[in-house]
Image (cartoon, rainbow, N blue to C red):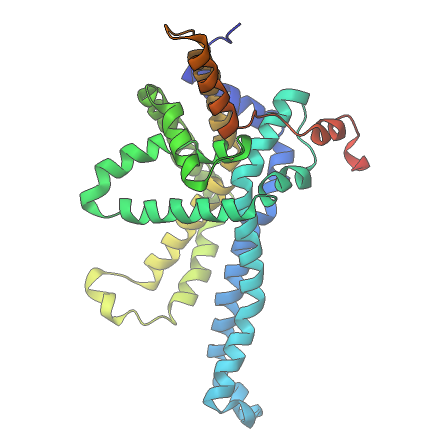
Length: 333
């Protein structure tokens, strides 16, 4: 019996509900991927800024540092710690695009969000395909930012929006196959998919970002933080940008806005992943119903088509080991 086709509004509010009920788990899971990137960047630019600002004093105390090769070596060494932290956090952030889908499926099956490592392994056990998927998506994004491709790029972005859900739940596909499968699922559901994306963008990219900005202002965080960025910006060569009214104060203010935006987008990634996983489940049910409808052809040819489809895409399902761990307490795994 086919499952009831869920509305976009139901998917949207159900996703928010699941996130809110497990917000402490999702915030904990996203803490390092989001904050680690910020810490890494602060270390990279902060240590480099400190070194360049104190270079004259350091060279007077340590004459060995008054050599170009030694200076470059010191700059490289100051960058490495922050770069390593940023790279690890950035990779974990990319992995979360698949792991959060698995967590959502786990929650729908067990009622719990648990065992981050097990869900990460859903992605890491297919690392090559995952990297290839991101590479293809990056190439598609770079082409789409070219003005002449904006419209067609946006249209295909909607059709390809479920590629990470397909990657997580369906086996036996190539990286290109993830894009084809997403297009197949959304075909005929474009307007509803666009509506869901619009709701998520307005809610997470605008409303929550504005809300956190108000909180930063109320807690008197915005101005002191902008001042810190402004002091750092005084060390930048801004003379060529003076005709465009680019000042250290402007850079400081804009960096705070970007920081708020990054925090909101990073920590609300679970909301978007949950909603797209729910939407994927809804469309897969529809696709299965359409695929199972009898056609006016011989039974022999129909059975061949079903067999061929089963061969290409293995039946999805949550790992039994993940379900087993769901029955344990949080400190037992």
